[in-house]
Length: 295
Image 1 (tube, rainbow, N blue to C red):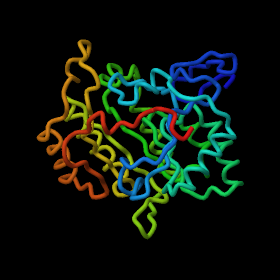
Image 2: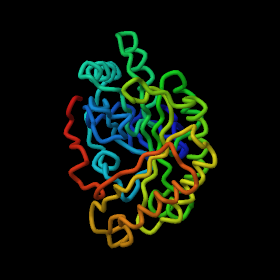
Image 3: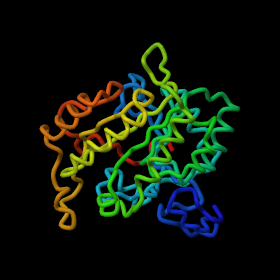
Image 4: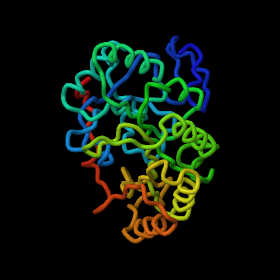
């Protein structure tokens, strides 16, 4: 916290003195919501729900972010590490299938300490690290033995959209190394008798309007690199949050034909371990309220 280099941006911010880097996160924990969540992949949510903890702040800050109120606006409640440990145990008591840490990168040291406390007090659930893919391998190595399931995005393979929409030159280089480390740690997927994942890696890709060919390159890269070691989750839920004059190309949802073409491409190249979304693209009603529930 004194000289923060937890993510690849390496801001060197002195968070202990009240300064913040690109993620805007202070030294203290800010949590916006802690509740059962039912809209993850089926092997993560199941019928019982995933015990999601939404952390405020983000090292990416994508212009199309659905959670912008917490990623950019920093809505959330300041809590102690001890309280975070209690939240983990409360979610376990509610029947959660796992503890799902959403956008956790800038709070890794706090999370490790909270997991140590909660495990001493009876936490047994798998831990899910749910992130945007823009991770630093040295930080991920700190999590070995703590995280069971890695759930990263792979947003971009080209620098052009990475720079344009996330101000993030070199996104793919960082994400590629991060996913390699995640696969090294988590290994081949393990499921329980209910089909709930206990260990493994699911890489998500959100298709953006106008970037179908980039999406195909991402799916091809993941499959050729990892085959059936990982699961690939191809998402169609991109939803324009506001009409943008700066990014007019993002003012539409993905068409059924675009998404079908990407899914068919994945099948044609041999992808078997994967998830797809059916029905209409997600609307704002699928975005949880960040009202401090469970915090």
